Image (cartoon, rainbow, N blue to C red):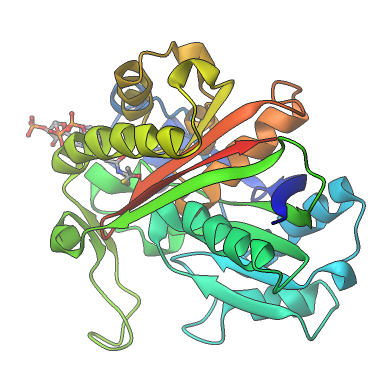
Length: 322
Ligand code: ACO
């Protein structure tokens, strides 16, 4: 059976970078740089302007991933966009991205698993690649969470940002030990009220705002993430000592630190971008991956664990050799 190998990564951020102090001033939030940094590790985030949308950011990230893979959009059989902030209720943002990339005819759909969206999407793409249904896939995580912030709720609006990340996957039958080795996904809908958006087409006919009980989310995140990382390592026949890099969903520096500590790993195994991007939901894992690849930390042959947890709850992890 072929393996799904990442052959290119890319990412894109909005033009407007906003520091904690600037955010507090621009949105009139009763907060401080010190509070935000201490509780979350966030120094700044990028906020999409009027002409920047989830689809435009996704397309920009996809173009960079295609360039890195030395491929054209017409070479792609499958496009999946993981997002909780689509341009429209329908059609899927993936179809818009396909059109903006100048192609047509490939499979294109969205995956909604909020912050776990990219881990869910890459797992679905991997299954289709290994089944021989497609040979190449573009998997994108893209969000404009600034559009669903309640700017009067200081407990949430300081924590999120906008952006997109993408990977190109190719099915390779002679991949050696490279490629996606194992993945595990979970969901528990009973935790809905801890993290959700209070609007939607079928309920309120509004877009709604993000609502979160941060402390309880924090508590459950650390347990769920460390156990799913153990599961995926077991499935791949690996141990924590085999990991070169953990590429986590970037929710909060304290969640990242506590999760790797539970695995017995040092913090220097983490690719961290939460300080400069804040929490970009489904975009955060591929944004961190592309950051680590482009700055030379992640190199071919490295063993990576991607992990994420988000609203639902949903959570999951993927083990892959880059
Ligand atoms: N600025 C200043 N003070 C604030 C702010 C703010 N932006 N927000 C809250 N406070 C105040 C509160 O009012 C409270 O004041 P009080 O003690 O006078 O009542 C105090 O700070 C403490 O508030 P808590 O909510 O208890 O703060 P906590 O230490 O739990 O930190 C935080 C909050 C950062 C949200 C934390 O719970 C957290 O990181 N949770 C994880 C949530 C998360 O990252 N979710 C992302 C999505 S899920 C995921 O991706 C895994």
